[in-house]
Image (cartoon, rainbow, N blue to C red; front, side, top):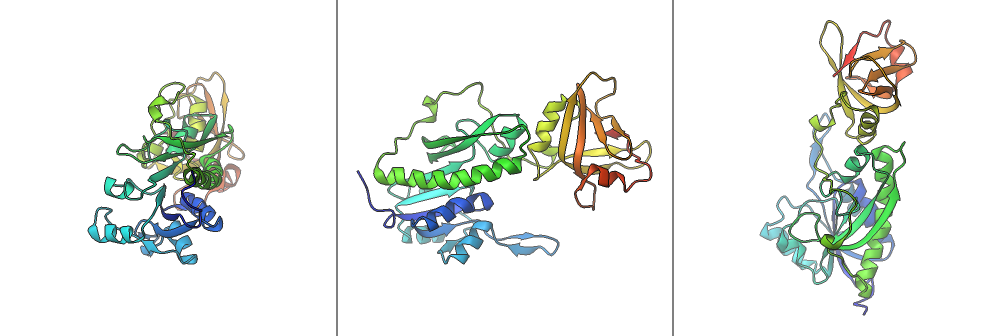
Length: 325
């Protein structure tokens, strides 16, 4: 049964970061009727703390789409404005947790695009954690919202491989493009009455469920007392943003915080204590793990730009740091 044509279906779209722009673009350019966009309020950013618009807001303004930026999603003024759009369907991509009064409003429901193969990696940072954990596969999932976050019945799911050399930025961009297509296909399924949502409780999962909690600064600190491959995966799972970090220590003097963006690893027996730093002062910088060396390829010192290691080493007469912690 077809409910209506896609250009008659009234869609309200909710999202904030770059990841949410591609599905919105696919809807607009695909001829779907987006009657309103909801995004986060502008936030101060940069040295001048000037208010900065979200990528989704920027896209909405460029394409003359009606826009709301509510501080509180239960505010009655916002709810009245949302009802006035008379949405048949709501779509959420990388936004925030919605109250029931919002997600149950449209007659065809509200669905979310999540960047993992649910029920794996429920939470705020699914792409990062899939790479950090050394997974070889991830994907995107669309599902209808319900009370518990990321637990609703699955409508569509698509898989993509993760190469051992991929950083989280590579996987993010791949999933972003895939997500645009999956969102429009999900809308088509709902329109045609062929969406058959599967409860996540009925889906088979290999191994234990892994969470994807929000990542904070302290989450990104490297623990060198781990296997080299584990550290390598951790670094690429946080590159280019927010970036893994460690402290370089010297025999005397204060430590410095160093962001690490790219590395390689070599497993081999070694007697060095984890965190021991080795360099020839010209071409390599290695740090001991529990079962081998992690060779740093790209990093950033405080107040400096990101550099490859040989360029960085050329800035020192003698490299003064001997340990990372």
